[in-house]
Image (cartoon, rainbow, N blue to C red; front, side):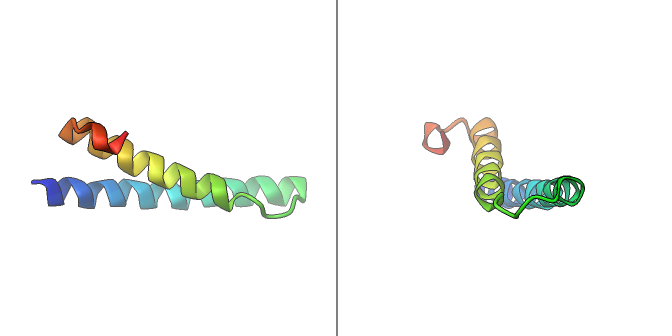
Length: 63
C-alpha cells in the first residue's frame, strides 16, 4: 500500500515538474528572461510529492 502511494506521489511530482517547466518556458519566451527557475521547479516537485504522501498516509514525517 505504501509503495503504491509513493509511486503515485512521484508521478504527481513529475507531472508538476513538466507543467511548471512548460509554463516557465512560455513565460520566458515572451519576457526574454534568463533561465533561473530550477530551484522553484525542484521545490514544487518535493512539495507535491510530500504533500500527497502526507494526505494519504497521515504521517507527520512528510511535513
